[in-house]
Image (cartoon, rainbow over the protein chains, first blue to last red):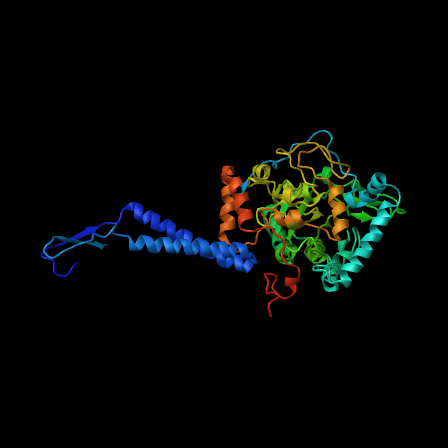
Length: 90
Length: 411
């Protein structure tokens, strides 16, 4: 919420099934590739381990990016007196 | 779930040409074939040049061929080399176990399923990676034992209505009442095997053979101790692969070797014939034949171009080392063994390159094998991924002696 606004509109958006599906898939892939990376070191498969760690990193980076953009593009140029909108995730 | 049991092994088609194999494998055939192809004295010249090469490689400490590398392999052979079919550990008669009679008890009896579990549990304890039980098939038993030298007479292998197996200077007698075969797969040390083609890498195979001799001899003694007859065999006496196919240990792959779902083709096979009644296992299908049709990684990796590139398996054999009358991707064993001489090693690149040859720590391998079994359409992707992830590449032989490896040499 923005300081100085006259009116606050709080929009509470429920996460959709798609969101939870994608989050679940992301988590599954992260766990799978972390396990593959760790196991590949144990198996002496260093190239497989390196590739798996890279995939883990890329997936984590994607998740961070998605989290930062979770409300969609931020509105700019708010001024006092305008109606403000903020999102609260459940 | 992805390993399906089936009534007949995949690639089980046989023709009337399918008969008991002569027993003359490539090791027996190489010398006469070499002489026939390259002239008199060519075999001896090759052996002499090989011996010189080994000495030079030892002197220059060529990676994988230093004195410790070579002797590691020699040491691993010890158990196998201390025995031979029908004698020593592979004796066809009791070695030292006490019989039930000596213990004042009748022989052990139980329902066939329970008996199968008992025998499998014992085999696993002795070191078996995979165990299956199948009915005896006389067609898989060799006609004769290979001669140890050219002066020796052929020793035929026969089935007779007798109570106990016997071995003489001229004959190996298997009692007809031996209607069951316990087939065992011994996984090889994958980290060591990945150092092939070198003398160091050969130690994995050598150790596999020695483990095999230990496991089958121990299991044979266990069975004799229960009051039954048992004949332990490693590569000798019969063809291990068809028995293993029937016992559900694996499928026949492009290498013309058994490929197991758990360890790929990096296993040594051995077996015990017995008259102990047991419940038998069924053959399996985990999608290997379809996978091999598309993959061809082993054929690409083979330095001697000995493996088939044909899309489909066929009845077309490549030489007298192949037993005709069954469908397979037949290999050129002459080219294969010729490369063994050049590399002073037992090669094994095809075993390591197979996408089914994997460690069992990463869950993803299980997922890939399951998907390949259920959805063969994904097979080409798995071949590409296998290459991209660097599987099947030769590992540095020198590094083996110093690293903390999965072989358990830590500390």
